[in-house]
Image 1 (spheres, rainbow, N blue to C red):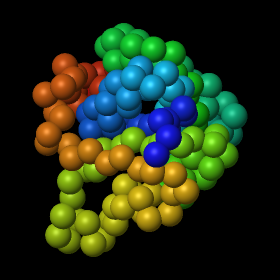
Image 2 (cartoon, rainbow, N blue to C red):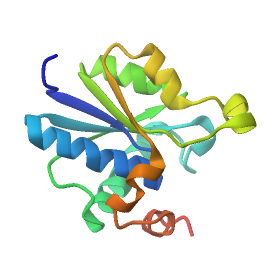
Image 3 (cartoon, helix red, strand yellow):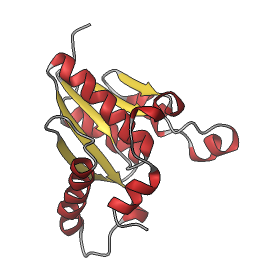
Image 4 (cartoon, helix red, strand yellow):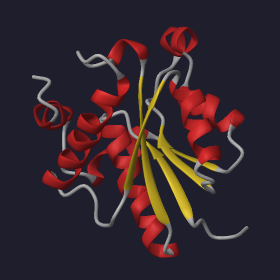
Length: 158
């Protein structure tokens, strides 16, 4: 196995995804790899603007400020905004950007919730062309000093 040179980290702005980002950064530092963050705006998440092109720069800026204000990134990252089905767009971004590793957290759903919603991580694992490292949310929660409330406040959602 060759070391990763370009890591993709899907971020849905949950504590889980931020934890995965920090884990990916550790890997990136170890192997001197580039990190790209991808946020997939689902159809219901559209901002009150006329087009994606209006919303995307603001969304990128909001994400960048959250990451910098909370000291959640330790190295330079690229932020990509995609629109559509999260699993499909994550896999497409991985192919388009030629990444050789995807790092993401599972949300730990089980039972009926998992059956109805499906698992984005599971779909990515099954369809991605590169290796996918999935992290269990409970194991890494203590690694970061940020809560869901901190994220909502930073994104002005409260």
